[in-house]
Image: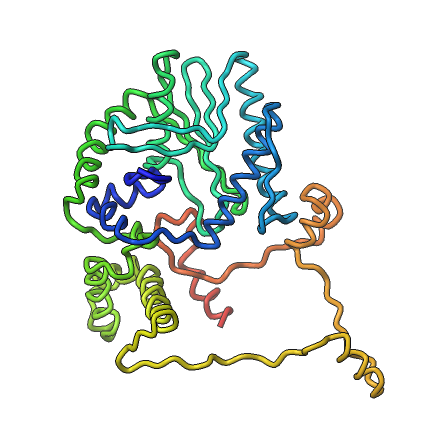
Length: 376
């Protein structure tokens, strides 16, 4: 099946909700974005750090993404893993720790497999930890299909040797300071696999079922050209272009619930059309390629400074204080708080309307109007 399984764990949310998407995606070429490459580099560094801690043979990876920032963030992940391993070994001295472990869940999804960043097996519990280096949005481990597939793979690997009754899953996102942990009983996980996963995986592998659009469409290779996704957004766009007073409350709520995805979809379509025009000379009726606006730049800053000084201008440099994030990285979190903690404050954020699923606490609506007027 190649490097990636057709029914990959990482794309499981998509093919579980839109079963024909897995086969449809296979028609498109594999393109690795710069973000994916950066994530791979972070995982390689994490693997190296953990193997070194476990005293296993390892060579430090060298990539174009090497930086102090990545060292710090991946170091946090390695420290977390180390803590979990040490804690486990206090109660189970012969705990098994596996790094970048191949996990097979093909008994539920045809030819399905994935790679667990870290697997810990101790007596009655198997734990799977997944590093996510992106800084988009926090991802919850609760009922997370990718983690559940990894859990099934770990169960398949060890349940004949251990009496496992609990599967624990953790998603570690250092750049968002987010750690989400959730656990489920082994019988309940297997029940989900039989009742939900297995029938949908069978449809997905055959490319059958109905196309269903949702937030899982964003990273689908076919997402830009998918008719089901396009139709859903076009219907919403028609509502969005009406006067708000003509929409019912239910319609407004529906637009609000997908407005962000609608905007992203439009940007994706625009980027796709631009790429086709540039790379394949595609002519789109009513559109043309032009050179974008740009700002003037110095060809040689040292020469500019010298010329300005010779002309009698001396006040030509700016000196600014490092921002909080850069200063914290320079000093380290603990030292930063010790030295500068008393000088920090956090102003009120802009009043924003968000879905109820957002983890931020709701503000008092009676004061929201006053806060909003202050901002504008």
